[in-house]
Length: 444
Image (cartoon, rainbow, N blue to C red):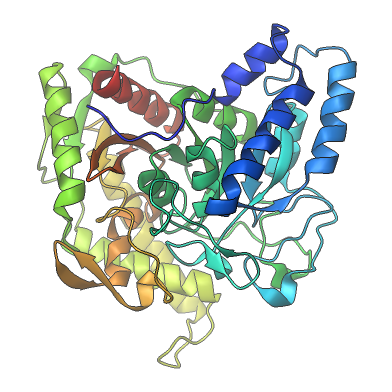
């Protein structure tokens, strides 16, 4: 099954291997990536903060030094989402009033990546407050989808996905509370991993209104990698995880899958349904068991309502919403109780199934718009649907704190379509491995 690709550039592990075997130097790898960004980004606008001079100096030092044995990303150029602090670079989350806010230290993820030998070339675009499925803001402008510049690359890690899909860099790191890794991966045709809540530290990924102060690792929100293959996702998770993960030993061919294509909160566009049904059929032809229904699935309408309530309170930090009402401490604890019950329901489902397959979003990449998708209407199967309901497939894994890997599975009309592979909490490496096996069956 084919899906549209824009680049056959090597991944992070492949670049690291070439450096290790003397086929290229860190400086050559960095300068090649800078050349790609300078050539391609005039039309895409993904890498909105550049740090080329420091990257080249670091690469020169690495090239002149001894090759270390304990840095699996030694010399690999990459970018990172604008919302992560990188010492010496601005962090504004798309707001003009914070455009000159310069970070004085690296985020925890950035430190881990640098310790592994990665070279940060710059930062990739986001929407204001990371709160849209577009990546457009008054500071850096609009990022275009590499497959069609009239379309959104997704958000809020849209710049990240566009940079990876176009071949500017082999990988990037994003964040996700409402599909912000998974949707850009889906829209741009790359791989992305939403980690289990709490797996990877978010220190240094804090709204600039906090003025450099650390904050609690807020509910629902996680960080995770985007890349062009599963192996790179796996390595990036292993380099940044704070909880020891162990992959399961059950053979992939013996795994039980549940395919969910319908959600009571929002219809699924045929442009998404078609590639996912075709992918499931390919798995079945390969001897994989794929169920379409199960009584174990939690009440998805109730889950979506609870997710949206918690999401809105989390993003507003309990402040009054449009109705003028704020959330009390009692309200918050009630929400956490409901979330805990939902987590238990999903754990029961995963006692019977190994993985759930689902759309990352109910639609493919959509045309640029001035308003947020969530504040207006989305077009699905030719009809108008409240844009906020499109978050239903994001909430499927976010609300119960589950890991989800998105891989590209097919295309409709030349646009890529992805699929979520979801499993129990802390089964991050299993999700990535299953997605890798699915990708091999579909694409060879």
